[in-house]
Length: 184
Image 1 (cartoon, rainbow, N blue to C red):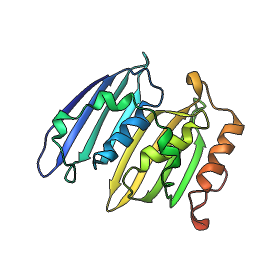
Image 2 (cartoon, helix red, strand yellow; image 1 turned 135 degrees about the horizontal axis):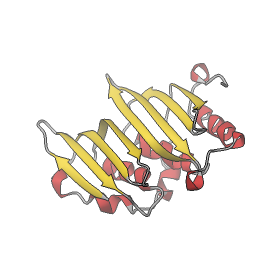
Image 3 (cartoon, rainbow, N blue to C red; image 1 turned 90 degrees about the vertical axis):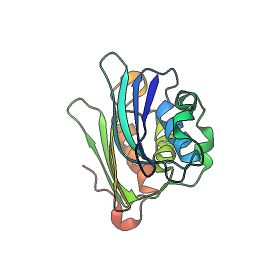
Image 4 (cartoon, rainbow, N blue to C red; image 1 turned 60 degrees about the vertical axis):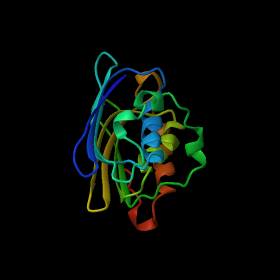
């Protein structure tokens, strides 16, 4: 996978990526690596193309990063294992909804307070259900996470209904009572 960093001002930079990766958990590993460097994802989009190549762009807040962001080995981050994320602090959600799309993938919409490492922690847990993102729209505004994540199963298969219910159960564990989703 190829990574390009476009440096901005006041710690605000853009990271672009294109290509493929052998590690099916590469997104989770990348997001955790960014968090480890004290880099926050402000917004972004990543999608899996028809030839199984990824294309994405992220707006990063690197103001608290202690190293030169242009020297970070982003590709190396994608090869890391993600097992440590499962024992890390659980993500906190305010609300969420899970819907089935026309192509039978699962779409997850999340609202949550901003938390460093949020995406890495939640994706590590969701991958335990055999779900992997194929598209993500990420946004953080005024201290609120508002993300849309689309998942497919292992091998790009459509997730079955038991997996959709397991996802709902998992996310409810991270959500206070008033934010719990109503089954669709």
